[in-house]
Image 1: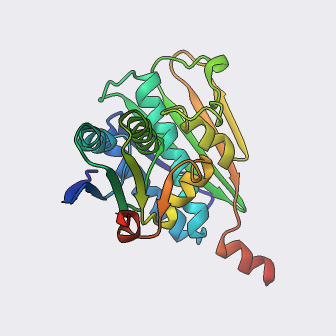
Image 2 (image 1 turned 135 degrees about the horizontal axis):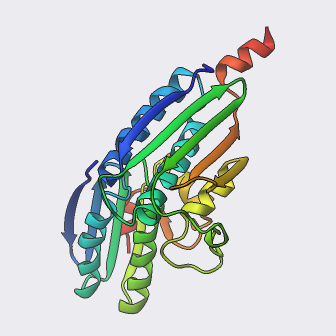
Amino acid sequence: MSQPIKLSIPSDPKYLGLIRKVLQELLDSSDVPDDTARRLILCVDEACANVIKHSYEGSCDEPIEATFTIAGDDFKVQIRDYGKQCDLSQIKPRDLEDIKPGGLGTHFINEIMDDVSYCTNRTKGTLLTMIKKIKTGLTSTQNKG
Amino acid sequence: MSIDLKLDKAGDAVTLSVNGDIDMSSSTKMRDALAPLFHTDNKVVVVDLSGVSYIDSSGIATLVEGLQWSHNSKNKFRLAALTPGVKDVFEIARLLTVFEVFETKELALAP
């Protein structure tokens, strides 16, 4: 699957389950192993939750656009919002030695994904791009063949 | 996406059983159910996660709060029956050793 799959949801937390389900279907259909799929879904969920919290500051009717691409061994997801642009200097995972609630989402994304970039070079909002090298069942078979 | 919660009181222990995905839309409901348990005479508070296949950072944050409440109230706080997906998230957060984690609810309730 090299054609991107695009999905737009309102910035309401109740739609996070929907985006997880769609991504699960997509990863299943591409034979991505379950444990890898789980982690990719976690990253997308956390990225969307961050958009709701920080870019739209809790407003529930703003657009979040997700674009998923699986090309070869690469899984790429782009999350676009049109809210408050994030301050790149403020995006950092918290110190894990400091046991306290909150701040883990960015840690999950940085820990799981191979490449994470935030682009604020636009009039409104942010484009987050996350890339992960994956080994799908399909590519494994192709490589063996 | 909603979660179902069930409370079971047995002696001086109470179990909160959670069913469903714990995410940004549902973690507040779990927090609201969990918080009052540390203000009673419950000596042991168990969260049974056997019905949870997905948890995000907001769910983990709620359980970390539970840990803090238990330290303040001197109650024991235990997690039971983590599914593989939930356990993996705890491992990525490097929090698995911070909590008292049991294979089953029954083990968590044992004195």
